[in-house]
Image (cartoon, rainbow, N blue to C red; front, side, top):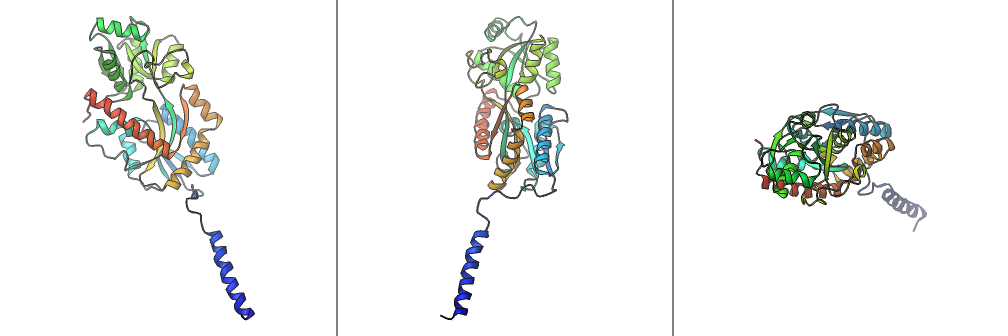
Length: 331
């Protein structure tokens, strides 16, 4: 073989091998976010709400981490449907995300007949941010101070105990329906327009009980404004470690944990979903954000796309059963 031919063939082989080394690895994390490109987090609640505040903290941390601007776009209304629909129609490129609560994907599909999105086809679960709970709270002057006493009183006085919810079909409403069923009691549902109105009604004595958010319930309890009867969660809350869960008190079914989390539009590439989860999880685990969550009586999660998808599906099935049993339907 001539030296020139050997050199040419060797060069071809080296180029081929070299090309193999420089080929992008399948499944490698994509370059997200692109430098300077804006990430929009749609929050289906008004500015100043609890979910909005946490979304803005995460946005700030992601901006600090990546250098890319992250903005929060509030699109409240229709039980999170308006904001969710906007994201469902967005491009699956990772630059439009939804930060929402459990109702969007696990309750609305069973409650709303003509829902303008498919909870599974139109969204990609990215990151479960927070595990949360509601706490059964009673007016400070209510004629009962424990769950057992509530049930005894309600059985002796059917139809005389009112319970608030912050809207029809909300977690506070559905938990009330489970309480009715498992306690074998006749209590009256009084829906309000938002958590503020429901809380005011409880404090004023217009209703006797309300499944309040943990941070709100604990704040009122510490101020001596309410009695706490038990958390509707799967384990005791750190902030209320001496208060047994409602399930421990003999009321099965009141253990469906609430959550807040991040979704992208449907058909997001799995590698991109993992990359976005990685970036936001790093923001979530910063001391400032973690402390904010824990101070509110909630729990940092960080479950990624695959695990989060399983959680969403499981909660969808469980809430569907509750809603069907209660015969609730929103038009």
